[in-house]
Image (spheres, one colour):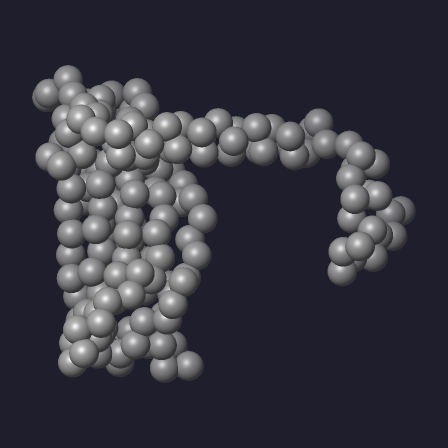
Length: 181
């Protein structure tokens, strides 16, 4: 196994025709189908980078920016943005293309944290990321910041340390009625 790999070495993409069987009751492609494809490509990218079986540890924010229509081509692109000791953040970009007009739309982007596993199911080290441009530094730094912010957010609202009285006044203008017992 290499000690470091570039994002380019692990980059993957897939294109799939969106069929009526992929649609929801509103006639648009079901978000769950798109999420499943995103998870698959994140797995492929992380496994290619680590040369190990990988599992999804978390998904950071998925915003559906525009609907995908039946009959459009959906292209998913994935690359490694960050490497920890046993984990990787895979950036996934989704674009749809109308096959008759050729018009492309960015549908969503998300970040999947994937963890490499050995044959016994234990987390195992992954190659580091060899960054060769400022875009790579930006992506790595953004992923590192996102990871640190998530840790702070999770510990701030940990149920064993949470003090509701600190937040009640700030919730006064929300669509909420507090009736503590």
